[in-house]
Length: 395
Image 1 (cartoon, rainbow, N blue to C red):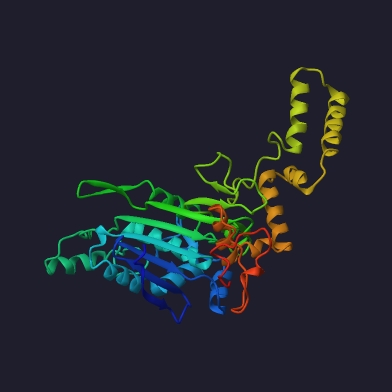
Image 2 (cartoon, rainbow, N blue to C red):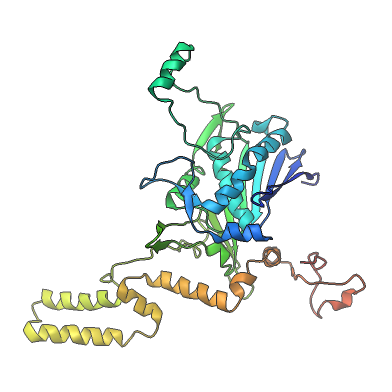
């Protein structure tokens, strides 16, 4: 997009939400880029883990969609105006234009919600985020009939982009499992326009750099005061590994079929499940009793020997976790995340500059980010290294 032009910079004084809008006339593409965390208001937005309903006014039910309250309030502060700018950027020809929504950190979370809204409801510049429709009741319907209004609401035709794509970097989780399931379903849901079948969301990639801890937060928690607060990921993960790891890029649904490294997966398992300490012991007992070889004190002795032998193999908290039914793989990821926080990797890998470098490496470039004064010369580059086009960037 050689002709990419900057159109608008928006900021909400109330929430601190910031977004840039760009446009390429040649490619007929609108780019919406949300800014990440950089001031006190953003930290307040990030810090909350409390949730609210995705659709304002929804009742609390088992399948209700919940999202991070701070993120939703932030996007709501600019949503209606932003949609108007996006509409104007296309000259009103929305169906002929593509849209890319992106952002880093907090900006990625806002991009996630923005794409969910537009993907589901289309680009309606007259409203903000979704609100539950309220019926007028008996009196309202009676008054409406006197005014000649027909019962029922005429559904407005959604204006949709030709292609709607999302690319986020280091984005935290934004909603519960129900919210994420609905988001992912929009990647499969199709509509037809002028005889052409299109997906409501063309693609949604969530780029995570190495051990970036922010991309693994907020966690699902159980609290006596707040109850269960659940969070999950939307879209697919593109894990950009650190330089020392042989596999530099892992793509969810494309690479091997293992569990996404940045998802929680199954937290709790049965303590008697296969592979857990008590499960293995119970298996020994069941096998013995099934063959009728263990009776009375022999049965007790068999259990004790089994427990003693298996416990003797427990060499870490990761194995002990299985005793109380915590999935060992989950515990492994939690320990790794804690280690990354302690040694600084978790926050270092989250910085924009680190994403800049990691993505450069994927293209075979050196991609070192250094600070260089204007009077410094190219001899500053270490011997044996080629200077990349990234080296002149100050981050």
